[in-house]
Length: 385
View 1: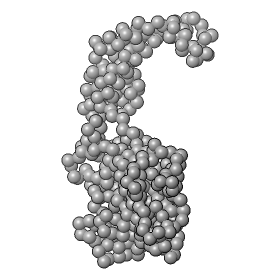
View 2: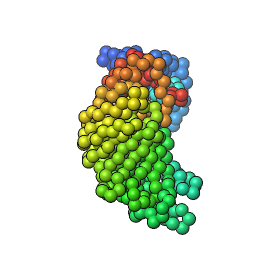
View 3: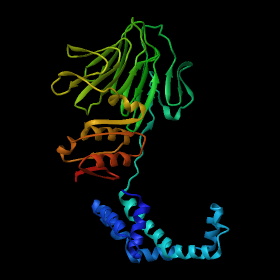
View 4: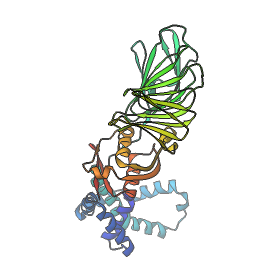
């Protein structure tokens, strides 16, 4: 939607007969964009309602109001009295109706149609081996302990484990879980760095042993594995697939609602395995496991498109809208409603800061694809234009 104050100004100027031809076209275009705009226009341009708001604003003590204005804008103090009177007169003719219309437009359009949906942020829960659960966003700058033993430090939304190996034979496991609208970063006891995307679960040892380093992932995470030739690092997914590395950087996406499990290699080498089949990936390659056929396909990709989320970006390169909407649902916590499968197969491209409110992403989608998106308390509703 165009700036609400601009629309209110156009409606006000139309009511007092000061709208130019160009402005008339702008207003007409806005009104015709969607049905909700038409309803907002008719209600916000209701003369009786504007008069009520106008009368309310007219009761304001103008001298006191002008005094407050000059406190904020000292340059106006030395203006001739004629100028001030003219300004006040202009305020009565234009500003008061403008304020009234803006108020009405805000009241009838934004309050009924606009739902502010904020982006996700750094939050996660940590389940310790003793069964205790800690909510990390409320535990900043503190040490994580099990009894008297220090396990990790939680600082600046980064969970950093004590370095070293376990001396015992039995490993103790912690589980970190990011909710919808959440993300978190951490450093495991071997120095491996992990970024967890929204709606992700990672189970891992508090300290690795002398043998293989193994973690279990559900969701999406980016790994920078600390090199250790004697101890391979393996990521197990809940569908039975595995990624094995010695030291490398890669992204794993294994959400239950996605058609593929994807491993994207940025640096080094990894082995992706499932059901007795395995492939070796080189940097710039992605292994995709089709959940329906159980086939593994290897393709060349631009790796940043699959890891940009950890750097605060949405990057879409001819991505199906269905995939885009699933990402929006996880990151913004909204339900997506679309009954047209053909629209979900439409592809879009674009780059956006993922920490922006959802309306920015909606605007991008509507700009580059033939869809109209409405947002209310029940979620996003998608239809064709």
